[in-house]
Amino acid sequence: MERDAALADFETARGEWERAFAQIPDGALTYLKPGDDYSLGGLQVHVNWVLAHYRGETMSLISRYEAGTPISLKAATAHWSRRAYDFRKLTPATIESGR
Image 1: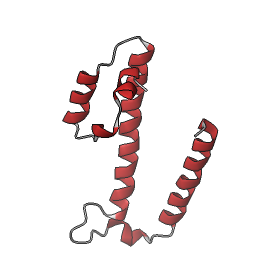
Image 2 (image 1 turned 90 degrees about the vertical axis):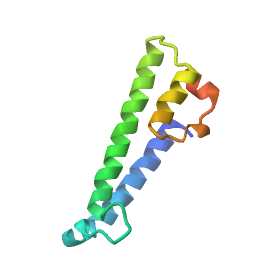
Image 3 (image 1 turned 120 degrees about the horizontal axis):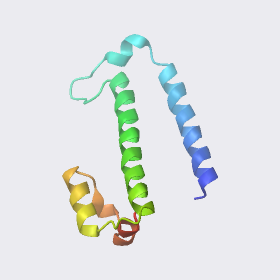
């Protein structure tokens, strides 16, 4: 997927997310159904934190790549394993290239 198309898809999805949340009454944002991990308001915060976190992880890898710092498969796997990421979906080539 090309960059511009991916950004357009992201903006569309973000708009849908914002419109959906705008329809939720304020009192419902803090309701936590038994068995759920997040209230609707908490979900919004959680999703934002996840995006910020992964952006930081990605920027770190990009910085290392641009600085010419090798990113070894063993070190990357240990790093992601400690954080409980599903690194099984990554390929060695992706990890080694830092992309």
